[in-house]
Image 1 (cartoon, protein in one colour):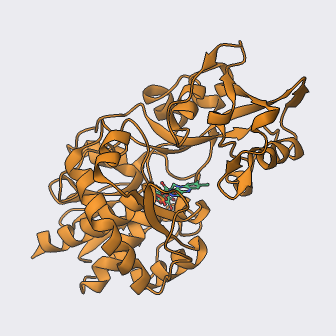
Image 2 (cartoon, helix red, strand yellow; image 1 turned 90 degrees about the horizontal axis):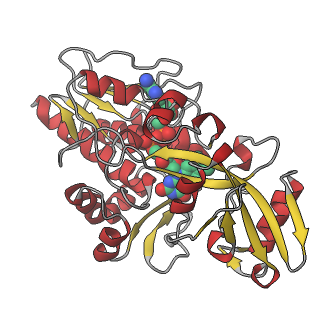
Length: 353
Ligand SMILES: Cc1cc2nc3c(=O)[nH]c(=O)nc-3n(C[C@H](O)[C@H](O)[C@H](O)COP(=O)(O)OP(=O)(O)OC[C@H]3O[C@@H](n4cnc5c(N)ncnc54)[C@H](O)[C@@H]3O)c2cc1C
């Protein structure tokens, strides 16, 4: 009988398993997919926090303040810890003045953590909770489950693009609710991106086709009703788009905005990427119109946990399975997965002693 069972070999599950083994525990890691890494592997690998606590609270006002505090206070040390797992950061900067963090090579991070976790049982999902062994649920949220997304988030669920691993379909949420856990706040919120509405979108397109310049454009739905973006991360725009007909919108970009910087690129670069991928891009007098489709990356509502990352007796949860941290806005999902995954392992092991 192992000391700990972990469900999910993404950011939260691998951090939990690596930490548990470091503490001398015997761990079994179940993974539903054919490879480890989950959405972490597909991600940009930027693990970050707001520099100022007040800004975090202001950006995500609906989140559980105690959980937010944990993530905010522990992240820097946990990034140091991650680097001790033979996973050096590519660099420890974010490129955004009001955030701090580090970027990792996600393939290298995945293989380093799998090694530290002592291996992963692939194509072996956790489908029921065992008796007498603590469990960390880290199955990544419910974005791949169209029915749950339709129930909690938008009736346009069938038209959303899944911008995530295909296996995070709410298994952790189901197991936790069966064990008596509660739902968090913010079940109708999600993080995602508006992608260029190309005829084919594969996982290699998740980053390059993201049209992250809503603040430089006029945003309107296909019926011509407009929406005024209100966040730096565009999270409100993608959540609005997901609730429009077809989960689609148009970005009307004035020529004057084409040279505006977006991270290391310009708006023009992103518009050209959209055109090259075959998305509807229309040139008009003095402006360019790009059609976008809402893509869901991770649900922001889910299992409610306490400050020990516990959802029910002997049952812990972390990462996208947990809700109520970014509520009302957006904060790094990799950061909360890392901090709460590690904490969940520590608490689960000490609950055995
Ligand atoms: C393109 C893209 C870019 C991103 N960029 C960033 C970024 O720069 N910064 C950031 O903070 N976030 C980013 N994210 C989001 C981030 O990757 C995820 O939110 C994060 O990986 C969540 O960690 P997790 O461990 O909860 O889930 P995951 O990393 O997805 O891992 C969950 C794992 O659980 C497995 N699983 C599902 N059901 C079961 C089951 N029943 N039993 C066992 N295993 C199961 C899944 O197969 C998966 O491997 C990005 C995501 C994408 C897709």
